[in-house]
Image (cartoon, rainbow, N blue to C red):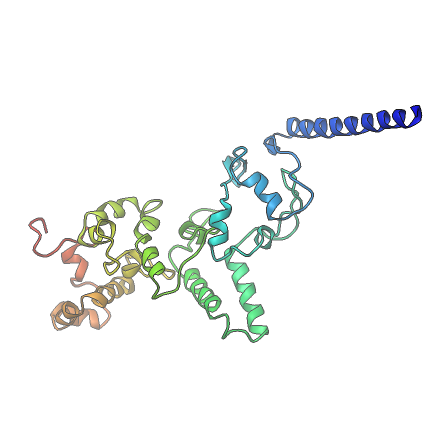
Length: 301
């Protein structure tokens, strides 16, 4: 009976030593590599569950060196919001193709970093080859928006490493879920547009808009019919406001709501000059202002 007991003791000792060694290696890795930020092996599989054990924001704040060399925190991902988005059924590594393992800092493969444009263009090519364009019309609209964006003011370089505004500056890439037109959820989303444009980038314009007749209707009374940024400036093909074509287009955009006023304006000298393609005469916003528009009977207007 003594031999089995001795074997049991030996096996127990081996297990304890193995566990202790694993813990020591994890702590040594974190101490030796400051880029690991104290994060050891997350698990054996490179799947969503192992990704979220570190990226759920519950354990600690993760960070990594950005292109400019500065350490920036990685955002925490909320699983419940992720699964409700349009990308909710996709795996993390479906977009993050460059992640080669689940140990921080991650090993990187030769694949490109996650990129909305290349991903959607690649998907559309596949859809076309498989003759599924009729079933995947929404994906086709996305590709059209990409082409419009490429020629927009936002797509122009801001620096050597960034553009003025990329997809994820306006759309939350992880929780992206723009509802289809004509639905109640689309109406709710429409009311969020001013804060999306203004809170991060166009703060001065948002301050003016918030007290305007359009802004108070949207932000205080939640009127979905009132004008938001995209009604005047469009969405993906946003152009610089100083060029003539943009100035003239904004007049037409105003007329989309104010049809009688646009018809009256077109009969004037100003309107006739604009109709010929010239933008040097008075337009809607020259008299009414742009973002801080008030009602014509407002004593301050």
